[in-house]
Image 1 (tube, one colour):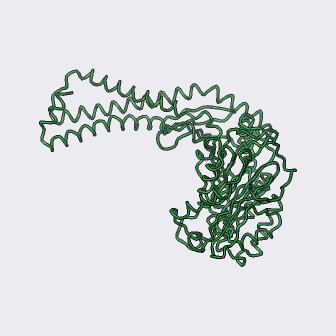
Image 2 (image 1 turned 90 degrees about the vertical axis):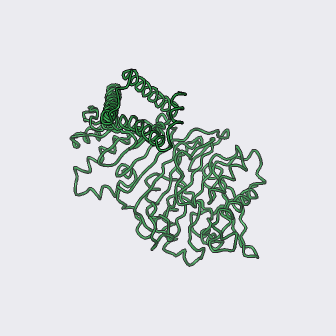
Image 3 (image 1 turned 60 degrees about the vertical axis):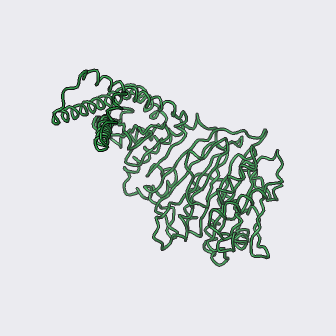
Length: 546
């Protein structure tokens, strides 16, 4: 080593830079070519299996798609949180007699899925051996190509044969083995044993359980095609049911979370989802209006909202686009319970207070946003340096009198900053916080940390009027539906994104290809002894948090 350092020291700067560049290039080839070889082999030679009478292709990928996916022409079922490695395994049917498969699945889904699972389990060792072997072969071919390039360069440059060439190559191979072992160790350490609890459905698969009436109409001219869709749905539903039997207790009620509608005509869409999922309660974290005026809350818009509250009552907290006038309008809508107060101060500012109530056995708190769009600073500001201190101080004041033994199952507010502050102010007293404002759902990995469930909802109005006529990318309509067990455990949450809906064109006949559904099974929490949840318990009056 000292000899190499001394040689580098004696070289002129240009020669040193050239030597360094050659060293980097050599090792880049030694790393890139084996990876490219492994990736090519995995792509070119997938494993073929037969399960449930259906021939499947099992293909692995490097870097392009991670996790485990099952792909069909009707969409994909994706499990993307298996480990930290950029490695994926993907199943897709090939040359399928879909009519025959659909008939078998529709007649007896349980038996068919049991056969499907059994066949896959039997062939799993062979598939893993095949994929591992071809990846190793591809890596060896890449190493061979890298060595050949190295030999060719040395020959062209007229360099002498290196002594102990075989030992040198063996050392390189040993280094590769060590790197592969390190990657395997990282994969084992980052393995998520609960990977099956987090999944995503796309395309028609995501919409199958949501709009059966609309899908039936869509396929009414293709009876055979609709039978196939029914069969695929039966398979997926049975697999999901098997997963739920081990992951969650039975559901007592479902809660829909929406936010930031911004006057958009999306309530017919939300109503259809609420109806199909047997939603018992809607929690809305605000920004119903745009400018906080009564005129913009038109009779047609309020009628759309009532179509949802006829199916499930709504608990609503005011956002930063909701003025005291908006609060009064919302109080007048049947089926809406406004949680928290928002009043105008003599100086033009605003005062908010938190309120609480019991709904279907859940203890729910709510805190409005202290800001109003277009109001005086700091109440009309959007600068984080101004907004964050205002949100935190408002939260601190709102819950300073809460007793240590008072536990909230859900605390709803508009700003995520306010939700984070509530978690700090009430350690061990909050099971779940809900917010919105940012028009984007928080990542799956952020939903449950340190036991507390944190749901930041996207815009349920596709951004609302804020994006009409503007050269901005249209966001999807987003909302979540959470399942609650009879013990009041929050068991799972399904998060929906419906792309292509606009403020004037959102309706239940949205194309199935635009729907994505992410399912996350939640870890059990400590629930107060004796707590029971049931939709027959009703909703109590809102009272000040104290």
